Image 1 (tube, rainbow, N blue to C red):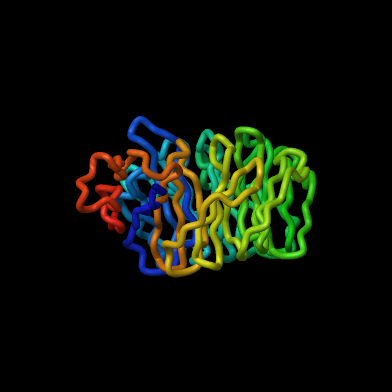
Image 2: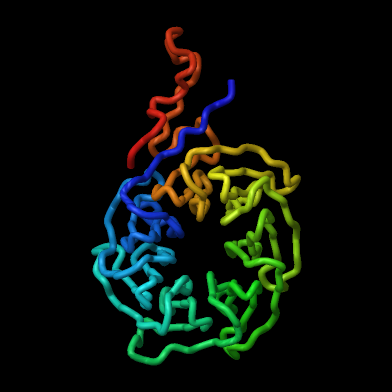
Amino acid sequence: MAMRQTPLTCSGHTRPVVDLAFSGITPYGYFLISACKDGKPMLRQGDTGDWIGTFLGHKGAVWGATLNTDATKAATAAADFTAKVWDAVSGDEILSLAHKHIVKTVTFTQDSNCLLTGGNDKLLRIYDLSNPDAAPQEIAGHTSAIKKALWCNTDKQILSASEDKTIRLWDRTTMEEVKTLTFDTTVSSMEYVADGEILVITYGKTIAFYNALSLELIKTVEAPAPINSASLHPEKDFFVAGGEDFKLYKFDYSTKEELESYKGHFGPVHCVRFSPDGELYASGSEDGTLRLWQTAVGKTYGLWKCVLPEDLGAENPEQLYTTPPEIKA
């Protein structure tokens, strides 16, 4: 009997959820941050979706959000022309970094000492968080707004995706362009997988995998609908993607075969990411919710409790979960 996927629904946002990110695994579990057009990024327990707190201070839509590895700091990128750094334990604002236009993307170095930002003014900026009064290093080259920027190659290089239909690889030391990928359409998302140096990008209906150091193409997969985001499982056996048809798709990474598809959201899916342990993936949508989906349906994990069919009374053989179909976390 096929198990039914029962996503956990995380409500609380009042506008579309446009970005999300997980921390690494800490002694207290792992954590999830969401960016939303309501201007109020939220922190949650990663395995259950339970709300921990809301970072208050932005005066416009928040387009990007991230956590450092140990979940002690958060950073957000917003339409109020600022990037902010927060104490993720207390919720206090640590820094507000003024920009000249809308900020779309933020990411910490592995040691949490530097913050990389990008946005509508087409510049990459590197802030030294130990010396926040110093002017940031600036990298110019993109000819349109930057949508996503990531550290790669143990923070020695930077990858950036722009509305100029390019992805560019930069050297952090020389601040010069190393290589450029050009596409026929704007890249909708980019994920960097450090283990194996894999770059996952989406554009149109295509999910493409590149070597992050050489930018050589590994493979492409075509999805049934335009895709806004994709994420590769930590063990690289499959990947998930979501987009304009409200569905979440799961594909076999080796064979490219579509394994599953689920509809749970009531609007386009804007972002999807696997948890650091690979046990679940989170999706954020135009419908204002985040949903958590089990990687292995039916496994006891987090708020999911598996009930074996033989443990059930004969009255209700269809009920395979003790969880109700919709859990408000």
